[in-house]
Length: 302
Image 1 (cartoon, rainbow, N blue to C red):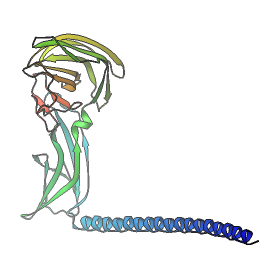
Image 2: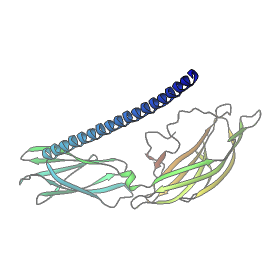
Image 3: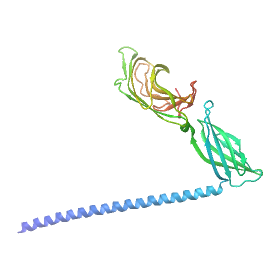
Image 4: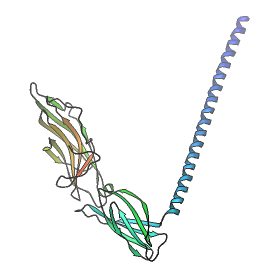
């Protein structure tokens, strides 16, 4: 009888333990839910506060501004000078008979022509400059300056953007000859080039290029959006550098070069894995037809 009572007590304790665990788990879930809800409320409150600050800041800027409104548009690019004409039309809040407005765009300036209460001017902007603008309004010898909320990368608007990828299937990229300071280098794989089109500009021709110490040793045509098979073998000696790149020419005659692969041998004809390159794989270098570098993203050609 006593043994049965003990068994019943054990069962009851187990049940109570299970119920306690379930209750604890439920409380934990409720606490987690309350915490998430509170976090959500705080996040929404922070967003609303930021919006209020932004609206107040925007209102204060509009009240302090000397400009009621402005607009700008781009003209036809000059392919030879690599400039884009940009026309601004500005409406000041107040004008007088002697009011004059000077427009400054990316380092260049022009006195704006008056048309009743609005002012207009056109300035050429170099395609590789940062596009930004401000105006100086003069009334009775008093000048007021204001920066316009304009900042745009003209290169991305007017030049196509090149994307390229090389899937290397070479296996052993370089096989050193026994007892010699040279060996066979192989580049086998698939190469693909994609292009993001730009306004009134496209890629006229493209090719892959293999170079040794800057001298072309092999090349072949490429088509956009198609994989191209590459299987090249050559002898590479100590101290030499082999590169694989995509080279594309756009409608302006500019040359876009994308470095895809690089192999450097040291004085013992061993692969040098650490170099002080300033050009990263996949980065685009833009030059003119004479090889002058016009754009290199914070790096320098070696």
